[in-house]
Length: 126
Image 1 (spheres, helix red, strand yellow):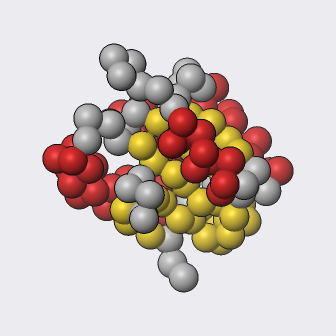
Image 2 (spheres, rainbow, N blue to C red):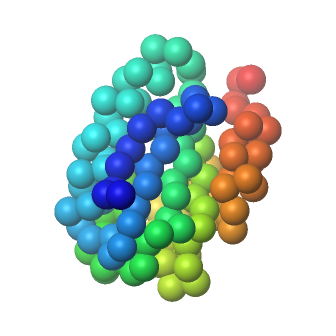
């Protein structure tokens, strides 16, 4: 299954990455996500995203930089990332810290924990 983005059954925007995450993969997913962001914005005041990294094997330096830029530039309220191997998790942590978005982007071991956090999260003004 290739990298993809879609609205899942829980109503979250979901991104799935497989194999080596490179710059092109990050750019394509971010670009594709704009369509779903618009659909979600019509139904809710919040755009929450879940990112599946369970099949990702590595992440290039360029992809990490693009992730940092994406965290800073894209419109979302919360992002739950799960399933990353230790190397990819460390790279994602670096991007989260660099973008200073740790209050709204979290890493989880399992999909269940990530989904629970998104479902139970309170949004400002809620």
